[in-house]
Image 1 (cartoon, helix red, strand yellow):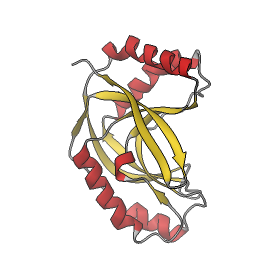
Image 2 (cartoon, one colour; image 1 turned 135 degrees about the vertical axis):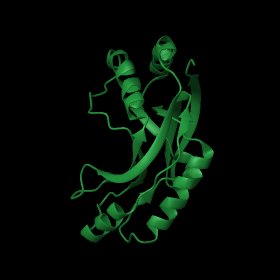
Image 3 (cartoon, one colour; image 1 turned 120 degrees about the vertical axis):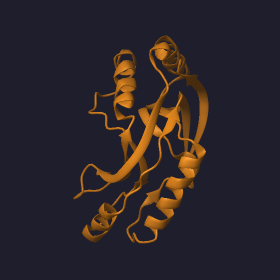
Length: 184
């Protein structure tokens, strides 16, 4: 089963991001697969294909560490690209508030997960993916996007969610497998 661990985004914030994406997408001619409103989330770990017993171990690790994690506030601001502006593959919105907490969650869980999963240590960059450009964007589109900005008011993150991801011709379908609520 294809899985990932993510932080959910409150519905009103997803709607705001979706409205922003719809406006921006009208001015981009390159083929970009924009993320559907219901699929917006902050990915902490993408596990890929894992067996059922590994899902149980993932859940066990999170259960063992969840007491260390507390609710925190997030605010989105700015637009950027992975891997860079010259070779855009991912369009994303930055995390202005809550970035340190997301990095802490990543590092708290990484060591445990790396003991039984093939995950590579990354320079984790908290972000909200809003689009994927398989063939990149042209220079004028990058310039246009750099001039755009979305800033949200602060909202609370209170849990991690383990998702299953099924790929379909119409796009991915994300199904929550289990929620892990932060203490306090």
